[in-house]
Length: 134
Image: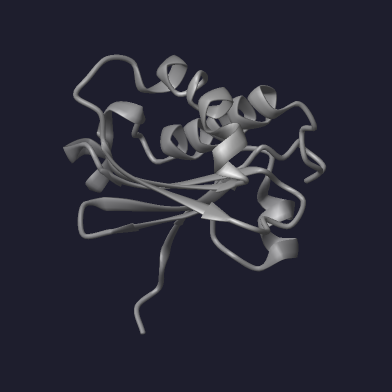
């Protein structure tokens, strides 16, 4: 098996080591980012929902930046939400702060019953800029 090209954001390496997964993997010109939640530096959830979502996006942004990428390079998004019927609109008020203007990435939203204490999770696939692929 080939060595995985792992991308770590600054300052969160211990959390990924503890939970035994890679934040992102570069492969064939793409960046596959693991689900990001609104976790504080110590790994605990941010309690207020909109701040929770913002923090998940900021955690995602840190991984994209560590790979030489940005939200502009994201092509596919999957979001997971606990109780989407009551939380979708509150969550979706935060999204434009990070996506900017249309056209937006492809998106799949999934309602779930459990996210280990979190209410929102986002995972993406981004096309790496040519310089980040080298």
